[in-house]
Image 1 (tube, rainbow, N blue to C red):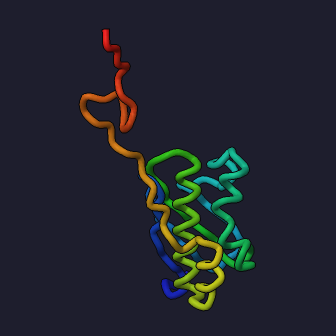
Image 2 (cartoon, one colour):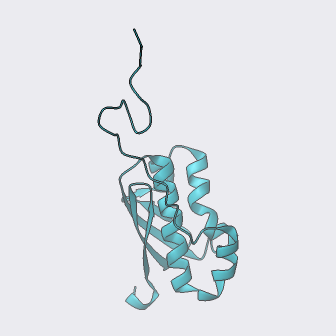
Length: 131
């Protein structure tokens, strides 16, 4: 496979980073050197990460290889979706309007708020009693 047909992009969500490679193929998705079905057991996560490919009718046109690190299955699926979207834009820039309208291009900036000292958590306080 020549390097010209391989598109690389990084997707992020929460504390997850997904390195994504998109190459012409038959629709195989590999996550951390495992098949998609053996890596993700939750159907909603599989559906979430396939959304950009389904929306643009490219599900069977590209093979996707992903290295993902950090977070849980939902955050990882979101990061992979972001990575696939960015790689698709490199492969076919004319899809930008469709993907932007669906809201896939923008990175989800929400992250966990840090715990504060003198408190139980980020916002939760220790129980207070006047007497």
